[in-house]
Image (cartoon, rainbow, N blue to C red; front, side, top):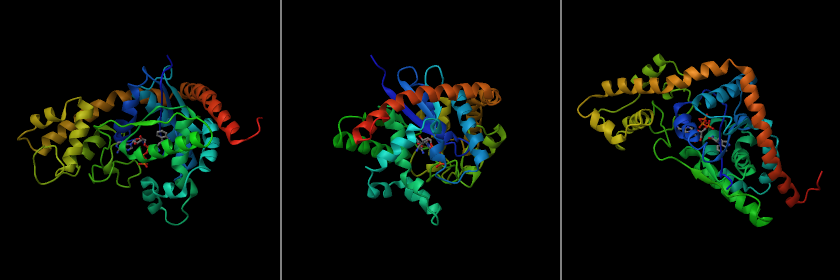
Length: 330
Ligand code: ATP
Ligand code: LTN
């Protein structure tokens, strides 16, 4: 039996946060045995906000090394850089022509990001979700493991797949999101009402996968809590709730176990312990990362082989699409 296909990606738009890890990458690891997985570093998406070219190059390799350090295995999964597979940009063009301006202008991420660049708003930010749909649809993907914030984009990918299939003939698998309940949305440590984001201008809001232990301890110590003073899991105490979620993911303990353990004990001790849990959880990833990032030949081998495998499948889908829309075969 053929394995079902999984696709996901992260933008190399800066250092990855524990939000990216918990909401996305961590869940990718366990899928590798059962599914035919494609994990991409989506650099075409990253340039929808201004990037410094040399930083983008550096970040792209960093994300690759982080993928591998977290446990993605290039023997099991196809790991590649999006811009190395031209079919992504090519299918995006075709999908643009069946995308509705109205639907794209209702995308939450577009509305939020366009607020940040009111003048010279670029068209790439607007068609960002169409490129994401192309990523997914090229591989006949069935499952897309992402954080909660990407749900609306997944809906669009499904709509476009169905629209194309109805307009021409069955061509694309209609994908489903795979969103893990716990940790689907890790919040900012400084503002527990907004998601933890690597593009936050306040660095105390996020913890990076590569943050040094001192930085992790400092950021958790400064994390915003409340004046209630009890480690409880509810929506009145969003800061603590978020910290409990992080604790649970890194320790493997249930929410209940954690709440019981800290009954009658203040936030100070809880935060101290949490910092150690996160430091220890990230330590093996950081150690492995430090080995990998210096092995440029190995990284190059991984992304070259990945692009070759990905291109083969992507081009098969693209050729069918081109034929169906009426382009003459080369
Ligand atoms: P930015 O914040 O710079 O816009 P981002 O981190 O939201 O970027 P990506 O790098 O593309 O965007 O996100 C990659 C994956 O990480 C996606 O699946 C996304 O849902 C997930 N993710 C991002 N932030 C969080 C978070 N705070 N909690 C859970 N999952 C998250
Ligand atoms: N837009 C996503 C990143 C992304 C993605 C994808 C995720 C680009 N292409 C395809 C899953 C499948 C984000 O998290 N910001």
